[in-house]
Image (cartoon, rainbow, N blue to C red; front, side, top):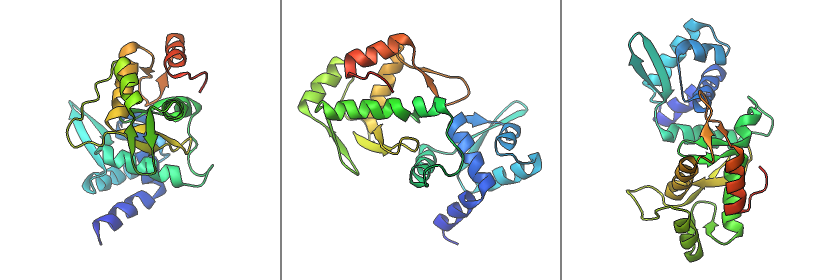
Length: 219
Protein backbone atom coordinates (compact mmCIF):
# COMPACT_ATOMS: atom_id res chain seq x y z
CA UNK A 1 0.00 0.00 0.00
CA UNK A 2 1.41 3.41 -0.94
CA UNK A 3 1.73 6.19 1.60
CA UNK A 4 -1.06 8.13 -0.11
CA UNK A 5 -3.38 5.13 -0.01
CA UNK A 6 -2.61 4.61 3.67
CA UNK A 7 -3.48 8.20 4.51
CA UNK A 8 -6.64 8.03 2.39
CA UNK A 9 -7.69 4.86 4.19
CA UNK A 10 -7.32 6.61 7.54
CA UNK A 11 -9.43 9.60 6.52
CA UNK A 12 -12.05 7.44 4.75
CA UNK A 13 -13.24 6.11 8.10
CA UNK A 14 -16.05 8.43 9.37
CA UNK A 15 -14.99 8.15 13.00
CA UNK A 16 -11.37 9.03 12.28
CA UNK A 17 -12.47 11.83 9.92
CA UNK A 18 -14.63 13.34 12.67
CA UNK A 19 -11.72 13.18 15.10
CA UNK A 20 -9.45 14.99 12.63
CA UNK A 21 -12.09 17.68 12.09
CA UNK A 22 -12.44 18.07 15.87
CA UNK A 23 -8.68 18.57 16.15
CA UNK A 24 -8.78 21.06 13.28
CA UNK A 25 -11.40 23.07 15.15
CA UNK A 26 -10.19 22.57 18.70
CA UNK A 27 -6.42 22.69 18.43
CA UNK A 28 -5.54 19.95 20.91
CA UNK A 29 -7.75 17.53 22.81
CA UNK A 30 -7.58 14.52 25.09
CA UNK A 31 -8.65 11.11 23.82
CA UNK A 32 -11.77 11.31 25.98
CA UNK A 33 -12.80 14.64 24.48
CA UNK A 34 -12.13 13.31 20.99
CA UNK A 35 -14.22 10.21 21.65
CA UNK A 36 -17.11 12.41 22.77
CA UNK A 37 -16.74 14.77 19.79
CA UNK A 38 -16.74 11.87 17.31
CA UNK A 39 -19.45 9.90 19.15
CA UNK A 40 -17.14 6.92 19.71
CA UNK A 41 -16.44 4.65 22.64
CA UNK A 42 -13.19 5.43 24.49
CA UNK A 43 -11.73 2.10 23.35
CA UNK A 44 -12.52 2.74 19.68
CA UNK A 45 -11.18 6.30 19.88
CA UNK A 46 -7.95 5.05 21.45
CA UNK A 47 -7.43 2.55 18.64
CA UNK A 48 -8.16 5.14 15.97
CA UNK A 49 -5.71 7.58 17.54
CA UNK A 50 -2.95 4.98 17.65
CA UNK A 51 -3.47 4.31 13.92
CA UNK A 52 -3.45 8.01 13.02
CA UNK A 53 -0.32 8.64 15.08
CA UNK A 54 1.43 5.81 13.24
CA UNK A 55 0.26 7.23 9.90
CA UNK A 56 1.68 10.66 10.75
CA UNK A 57 -1.65 12.46 10.90
CA UNK A 58 -1.75 13.09 14.65
CA UNK A 59 0.88 13.71 17.32
CA UNK A 60 0.55 13.30 21.06
CA UNK A 61 2.12 15.40 23.82
CA UNK A 62 2.19 13.99 27.33
CA UNK A 63 1.95 16.42 30.24
CA UNK A 64 2.04 14.60 33.51
CA UNK A 65 -0.70 11.97 33.43
CA UNK A 66 -2.60 13.63 30.57
CA UNK A 67 -2.07 12.98 26.86
CA UNK A 68 -3.01 15.78 24.48
CA UNK A 69 -3.51 15.13 20.78
CA UNK A 70 -3.12 17.58 17.91
CA UNK A 71 -2.73 17.46 14.15
CA UNK A 72 0.79 16.40 13.28
CA UNK A 73 1.57 19.39 11.06
CA UNK A 74 0.05 22.41 9.28
CA UNK A 75 0.12 20.33 6.08
CA UNK A 76 -2.35 17.88 7.63
CA UNK A 77 -4.64 20.76 8.51
CA UNK A 78 -4.46 22.21 5.01
CA UNK A 79 -5.28 18.78 3.57
CA UNK A 80 -8.39 18.51 5.74
CA UNK A 81 -9.42 22.09 4.93
CA UNK A 82 -9.04 21.34 1.20
CA UNK A 83 -11.14 18.19 1.46
CA UNK A 84 -13.85 20.06 3.35
CA UNK A 85 -13.81 22.78 0.69
CA UNK A 86 -14.50 20.33 -2.17
CA UNK A 87 -17.06 18.26 -0.27
CA UNK A 88 -20.65 18.79 -1.50
CA UNK A 89 -22.32 21.73 0.20
CA UNK A 90 -24.34 20.67 3.22
CA UNK A 91 -22.63 17.30 3.56
CA UNK A 92 -20.89 16.02 6.65
CA UNK A 93 -20.51 17.89 9.89
CA UNK A 94 -21.94 21.43 9.74
CA UNK A 95 -19.64 24.25 10.75
CA UNK A 96 -20.75 26.14 13.86
CA UNK A 97 -21.79 29.69 13.03
CA UNK A 98 -19.03 31.14 15.19
CA UNK A 99 -16.43 29.30 13.09
CA UNK A 100 -18.05 30.47 9.87
CA UNK A 101 -17.80 34.08 10.99
CA UNK A 102 -14.14 34.33 11.97
CA UNK A 103 -11.50 31.74 12.74
CA UNK A 104 -7.84 30.98 12.21
CA UNK A 105 -6.63 28.64 9.50
CA UNK A 106 -3.40 27.91 11.35
CA UNK A 107 -1.66 31.29 11.30
CA UNK A 108 -3.95 33.28 8.98
CA UNK A 109 -7.54 34.52 9.10
CA UNK A 110 -10.40 32.48 7.67
CA UNK A 111 -14.18 32.38 7.61
CA UNK A 112 -16.26 35.33 6.46
CA UNK A 113 -13.72 37.71 8.02
CA UNK A 114 -10.75 36.22 6.17
CA UNK A 115 -12.62 36.17 2.87
CA UNK A 116 -13.79 39.77 3.37
CA UNK A 117 -10.22 40.97 3.95
CA UNK A 118 -8.97 39.13 0.84
CA UNK A 119 -11.83 40.58 -1.22
CA UNK A 120 -11.12 44.10 0.05
CA UNK A 121 -7.40 43.92 -0.69
CA UNK A 122 -8.05 42.56 -4.17
CA UNK A 123 -10.84 45.03 -4.99
CA UNK A 124 -8.65 47.93 -3.87
CA UNK A 125 -5.80 46.74 -6.09
CA UNK A 126 -3.46 45.86 -3.22
CA UNK A 127 -3.10 42.18 -4.07
CA UNK A 128 -3.59 39.93 -7.09
CA UNK A 129 -4.78 36.38 -6.57
CA UNK A 130 -4.83 33.54 -9.08
CA UNK A 131 -5.81 29.93 -8.66
CA UNK A 132 -2.42 28.85 -7.35
CA UNK A 133 -0.59 31.99 -6.28
CA UNK A 134 -0.73 35.67 -5.54
CA UNK A 135 1.27 38.87 -5.44
CA UNK A 136 1.28 42.20 -3.61
CA UNK A 137 1.12 45.21 -5.94
CA UNK A 138 3.26 48.34 -5.40
CA UNK A 139 0.26 50.24 -3.94
CA UNK A 140 -0.37 47.19 -1.78
CA UNK A 141 3.19 47.25 -0.48
CA UNK A 142 2.69 50.84 0.66
CA UNK A 143 -0.73 50.06 2.13
CA UNK A 144 0.49 47.06 4.11
CA UNK A 145 3.65 48.83 5.26
CA UNK A 146 1.49 51.69 6.55
CA UNK A 147 -0.55 49.06 8.39
CA UNK A 148 2.62 47.99 10.19
CA UNK A 149 3.45 44.85 8.21
CA UNK A 150 7.03 43.89 7.30
CA UNK A 151 6.94 42.45 3.78
CA UNK A 152 10.52 41.21 3.59
CA UNK A 153 10.39 37.53 2.50
CA UNK A 154 11.36 35.03 5.18
CA UNK A 155 12.48 31.45 4.59
CA UNK A 156 10.99 29.25 1.90
CA UNK A 157 7.38 29.97 2.72
CA UNK A 158 5.03 31.12 -0.02
CA UNK A 159 4.86 34.91 0.11
CA UNK A 160 1.25 35.46 -0.91
CA UNK A 161 -1.25 32.79 -1.92
CA UNK A 162 -4.97 32.04 -1.84
CA UNK A 163 -6.33 29.37 0.49
CA UNK A 164 -9.77 28.00 -0.34
CA UNK A 165 -12.07 28.58 2.63
CA UNK A 166 -14.04 25.41 3.41
CA UNK A 167 -17.06 27.19 4.87
CA UNK A 168 -17.29 30.10 2.40
CA UNK A 169 -15.93 28.13 -0.61
CA UNK A 170 -14.00 31.19 -1.70
CA UNK A 171 -10.36 32.10 -1.05
CA UNK A 172 -8.94 33.83 1.97
CA UNK A 173 -5.34 35.01 2.13
CA UNK A 174 -2.51 32.72 3.25
CA UNK A 175 1.27 32.65 3.00
CA UNK A 176 3.58 35.13 4.69
CA UNK A 177 1.26 38.06 3.93
CA UNK A 178 -1.80 36.29 5.33
CA UNK A 179 0.07 35.35 8.51
CA UNK A 180 1.37 38.89 8.95
CA UNK A 181 -2.13 40.34 8.54
CA UNK A 182 -3.47 37.99 11.19
CA UNK A 183 -0.61 38.76 13.58
CA UNK A 184 -1.19 42.50 13.17
CA UNK A 185 -4.93 42.14 13.85
CA UNK A 186 -4.13 40.21 17.04
CA UNK A 187 -1.56 42.84 18.02
CA UNK A 188 -4.10 45.64 17.58
CA UNK A 189 -6.72 43.77 19.56
CA UNK A 190 -9.07 43.64 16.58
CA UNK A 191 -9.50 39.88 17.03
CA UNK A 192 -9.02 37.57 19.99
CA UNK A 193 -9.08 33.83 20.38
CA UNK A 194 -12.04 32.02 21.91
CA UNK A 195 -10.46 29.44 24.25
CA UNK A 196 -10.65 25.83 23.13
CA UNK A 197 -11.44 26.56 19.50
CA UNK A 198 -10.08 28.21 16.37
CA UNK A 199 -13.01 30.64 16.42
CA UNK A 200 -12.25 34.33 16.89
CA UNK A 201 -14.16 37.08 18.63
CA UNK A 202 -14.15 40.49 16.95
CA UNK A 203 -14.85 43.29 19.47
CA UNK A 204 -16.46 46.57 18.47
CA UNK A 205 -13.04 48.26 18.26
CA UNK A 206 -11.96 45.57 15.83
CA UNK A 207 -15.02 46.01 13.65
CA UNK A 208 -14.40 49.76 13.58
CA UNK A 209 -10.75 49.25 12.70
CA UNK A 210 -11.56 46.75 9.94
CA UNK A 211 -14.06 49.17 8.46
CA UNK A 212 -11.68 52.11 8.67
CA UNK A 213 -8.65 50.28 7.27
CA UNK A 214 -10.18 47.83 4.80
CA UNK A 215 -13.66 49.22 4.18
CA UNK A 216 -15.29 46.08 5.56
CA UNK A 217 -18.79 46.83 6.81
CA UNK A 218 -19.96 43.36 7.85
CA UNK A 219 -18.93 39.75 7.70
